[in-house]
Image (cartoon, rainbow, N blue to C red; front, side, top):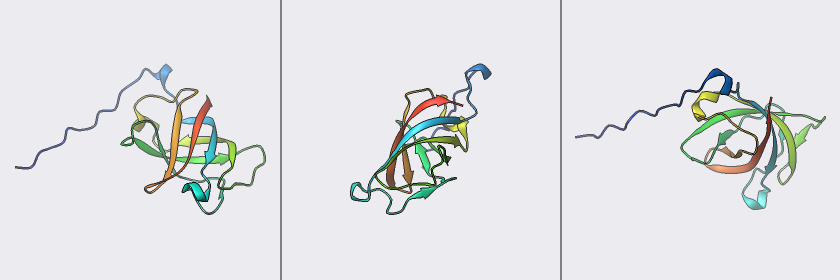
Amino acid sequence: MIEKKPKTKIAKHKSSDRSDGKFLATVHMLSTQEGGRSKAFRDDFRPQLYLTDPDISTSCFIHLIDGRQEVSPGETATVEASLLIPAILGNPLQPKTKFWLREGARTIGWGVVKRLV
């Protein structure tokens, strides 16, 4: 007999507690030696965003600000990000929330939410 897994539940929040998934963050991209990307990324980069639970993720769009054209491996930058599906994370993002950026199975960087937009 095959065991059925319980369906994942997504927490519902009052509309006043909800974010539309846009936030400013400081991101640090791992260097190539640390296992990060070998090339820089540009505006509208779309990695996976993970919170503390590795089973909960969503894609996000990263938009460069402050006139930057690209962010290279090993660099730190302030970016504006928007979650593709904000509700999948369950709890809304808050300032000081730490997250990880991944491409496939590889962690390429991490960041901290500065403020919601």
